[in-house]
Length: 278
Image (cartoon, rainbow, N blue to C red; front, side, top):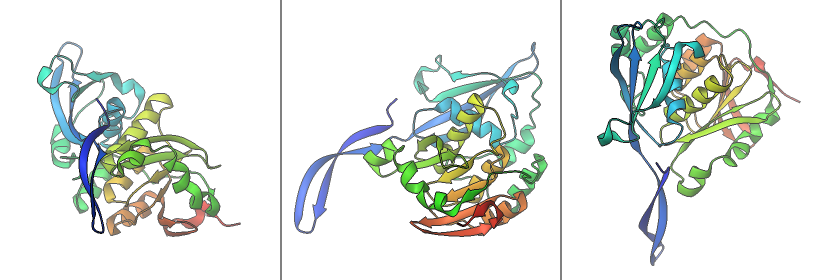
């Protein structure tokens, strides 16, 4: 499935009116189904439906499961693939087969799981959900220079082809302590972009991601900090501002939170000790 779709738009510039071709970011639903249970008593159930830009769906699904605390290691996943037997939802259903050893608490998942890409988790009960998943404050992490942070936005933009064509899509990127961009994913949903980049790293390297920093192209909501915490990320850098709850959770998780990156300017909201100034 394509990530961009053609459209004709009426472009207005002062008194000039022209009709021109343009491109839009594609938005389609993705249903995440789980196969679970013992070897002899397998069951299937839909976990969530999220609106996403097609592409890297298996990474999105696995990143989502990591953030929800359902999986912790690659041995927890037997397979992850699109459901080809559901013709009416061609390409929009993905099934993750979990190992028989994975225990699911559906009561907790029904209460705290996301309803859509834009919804996320909400309120103080969500922090309690993270605590119930056993997430511990991040002890280790990377240290970076202020100069590295100032150049991240321009670096990541080179890896955003969909944004270049549409201007309407988010990006999440992982970078190393020396500023190398390790992995970038785009999606119309901020949460999905993060799930994709975490899921890709989970598949290729495993978890945790404490050797990387995380760059976000937009604002920092609570849900994004929650996902980063579950993945073990110690440093978040974003173009936008954080919410009060995001700062509260980052402080509890011992995550360094940086926002409002504008050229040489940025704000540090929590744990400034991971950033050096030269």
